[in-house]
Amino acid sequence: MGGHGQSPIEVKLDDPAAIRDRARALTSALGDVEVTAGEVRSTWRGIAGHYEAPESGQVLRAMAKPDDVAGELRSKGDRARRALDGYADALEELRSRRDDLIAEAASIRQGRADIESGKVKEPEYVSLKYQHGNGERQESPKAELRGREDALAEDIAELQSDKDRAEIVCANAIGAIWGAMPYKLSGETSVSYDL
Image (cartoon, rainbow, N blue to C red; front, side):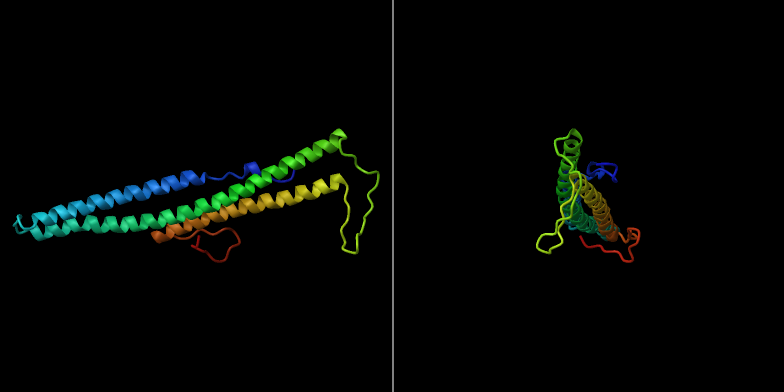
């Protein structure tokens, strides 16, 4: 890429399938906790008619608490999963864009090699040709490649910025579940928890 910025390959993206799998495993495990806590509560309720002691009410209330907490934890896990699924969706779109940028970088490298090998000839001079007054101009192959390199560098920077934003949106959505302070990208004045 002629020394312009980072390569699209250098924009590291998490694996969306792995994120979805881990999020699914998390909610599955929390669902198991909720089921187990419900079974404990149910079992102690069944004992209520057979267990008479001064502390029996306290024991029954104590066995309700894990079930209540497990339900709340499961609900928070579901919110985390939605945030992670949204992040995985964003990653899929970013991967598609990165693949397009990788293809463009390869095309630029091939164009540069074609010019350097003499396969594509540079004209001795370049005249600007205005066609039908629309301001289009014909550029030399080198100038056209420089323009493509510059556009590619901008697209790579935008890809990195969009990746950073997707990470922060996900982190903020998960952090909001427990009331964490939100992250902001530099230059942002407000924070969104939307995915």
